Figure (cartoon, rainbow, N blue to C red):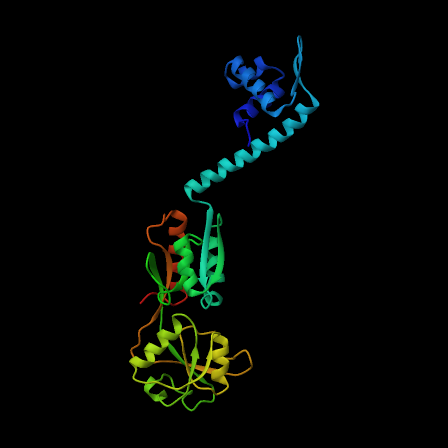
Length: 306
């Protein structure tokens, strides 16, 4: 434990610079006993001999004193930096956001969102963690992360607050050579007898199953994967159709296949992207800035809330 103070160090530096207690006291505009007592206490707790006392010539630094002065100068520089950074934190022009991102959303949004926010607010660092849907909710509740970019379903919402960023409309994905792939749009009833490629994941599976049930169809499941790209590859390979809300920019799949993505004419519930936080948590300026930036970022990506 440090047993001396920055004030004692400042008095020591003043004595070293001015060559005596009386001179340092005048420069600091304090009493000589205050300087002398601080210097005595500093030597006592550090067990150093900082000055040689000369009756006629005042005080001169010992070797220990010269070396200790170098440490004091660095300490005061660091203390000044801490003070400046604390002021920035208090003004919330600097800081850190621990952002959890649902793995499916990360490749579509995380990098661009974080980069654009860094350009807009350079003093704030965003530390991102990709996580499973249920883990995001738990991390928010236990304080491991500050905000989460996620869906509004697939985890327990208790104790959480949500800001909607986008409402994603489901789409049908077909192989490029499928007989229905040339259409401009499609009714799910036209796929009632087609096999279904399932994206297996918390929230997504139940959401798509509910949509199919609401549309009055129950297609046989031909292929299951937790990977969006694996699902698209299976569709391109002829395993059937799938439903997705995220649309990669290319129609090509990882294995060289090709798919077509069609809007659905049925009136289906959207899947909503939200920025989640712990209900009742302190929402300082940094968090509010990130939230407003996220709203603008998603609006610019043409996924404005519906």
